[in-house]
Image (cartoon, rainbow, N blue to C red; front, side):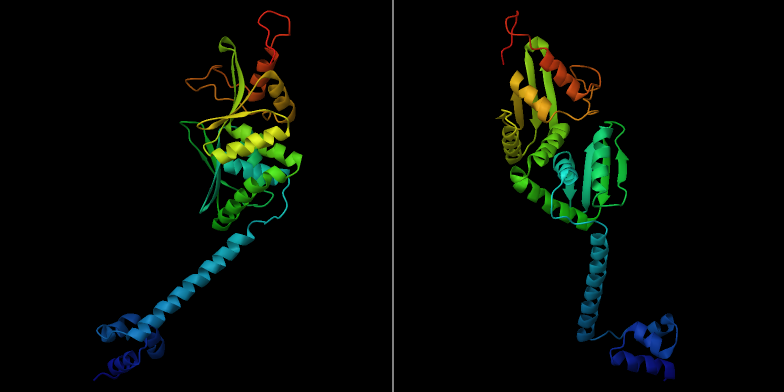
Length: 285
């Protein structure tokens, strides 16, 4: 028998793998394979190889996770930027298994979220634009960041009612910039601020925080919190308000204004439309 062939067979019977036989003989892989192709490894060897491959995969995953974790800064204390960031991700954003994203058509809000994110994560987001709707998307693809921010979102919703007043304000500003609108229709005598959210516990949290600023509101099922009456609108304007540059979409088919007005400007018009007590068509509330 060919000595090389015999050497390959003997090594195989000793449970050498193809790479191990190639290394031992110094011959090409194709030449070795020709002589051992019908000689399978033992069950014990196959189990050992499988276990080794699994451990190698886990080691690679740990290394990648460690790198992923080092790319962002963890935090223990809340400040305005962190409350702003996590709040926007809760409302018009997404916290998913592969990272975080934020969707909006207002450049002011997109820039705000990106600026706040840089406090903990320095890599640039991936940017997308839906040219049909005009909605832009910032995406941060990092598994560890997604897991971490999911926990922080739960923590913020649990703790926001106990945080200082200026942090409660940041939460409410983010909510109404993302989810709020001013419903001002003079022909129907409508003057109210509405904030939409499908999760009732979040609406209840918003209502509680508004009451901390002495702003009365009500939850209108299925999915909105409503602020009405002049005194409450004035308090909202003074304490919370909509951010400068945050505009309505005047291109929507059901738009009342048919132009891209700032939400705070519509609120100002609604408040100023209340007539003084004693005039015709007076509004006392």
